[in-house]
Length: 424
Image (cartoon, rainbow, N blue to C red):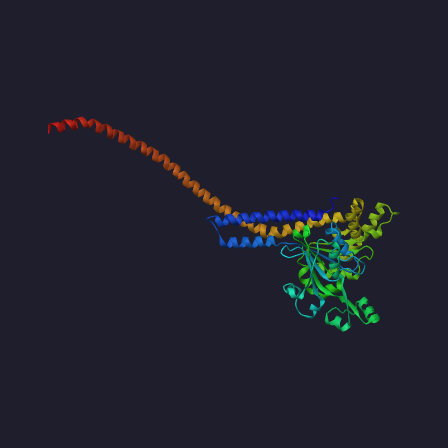
């Protein structure tokens, strides 16, 4: 089944980026060997190549709890492997922010940052440079069962007192679940881990894709660094709401606070449209029902319907796993993948078009102008040499005629010279 238009677009972008890197590298090498070598330009080209080489495609997923974010990520990227990168059991989804990528200089592994680090003032960016505070677990690529057991650590929780939750910055008196738990048990459940990174050799990740999965609203608010840095620096943000709940107050808060005015390229997935599927309904009546939900979501989020895609991530995951083309089409995920892939390419072309490509173009035009001027100068010198060659030929002929005439006069004078010599 050809069911990976998004991955195809990522591969297409990698090829374009590789070609751009090669062209810039060739130009830099030529410039270093040319008479017009420019150390400032060479340094700038070196920086450009480093930027391209380390470029990544960052896609951030945001949603409140129970919106199907886990199934969406798995359906989009990992349906072809016997593995779910995030726990899929009800109530056991990922509860800490997580980054999935590939670094060839490191073994496949998962690194977990203990929640206790929230008691310090250290930022996530700083803690990423401090390996000793993370717990690292290798991923056994030969055993999906062992890998799944390791990845399930993402959903681990810890029972703490209210004072402990306050010290971690995780207590929220407006959270009904927390309040009810405290009243019933005197304890509160909090995540064991604050942040996680997963290094995995997936083809798309090898091409520079980075997937960022964020926790629900309350935990997002507890990590302002995610809002200030990670999300705005993403190439695309994907926000999920669900057809079975509609757009809730929490959904609106996540959209307005973290996405709406913070990132240019964004999409809304109206997930779980399979709850609307009814064999008693005609296709047209079903389409009308879905359109009404899309328009209502657009109205509530104060956005346009064209960025809202009704999908069923769970059914798409099942369809891809079982190679069910009809179910995959009904899930509408492929249509979204195609648009998402196009938007990623657009985003990257905008970035490199406005920076690297434009700047290189100016440099190359400048080099071309110098070469053209030098060529004109050399052509003028060649023309002069050609003119001199013609003049030299004429002068040689005149000299040759004079030499022949002198020779004849000399030969003619020899008898006279001999006669005069004999008389002496």
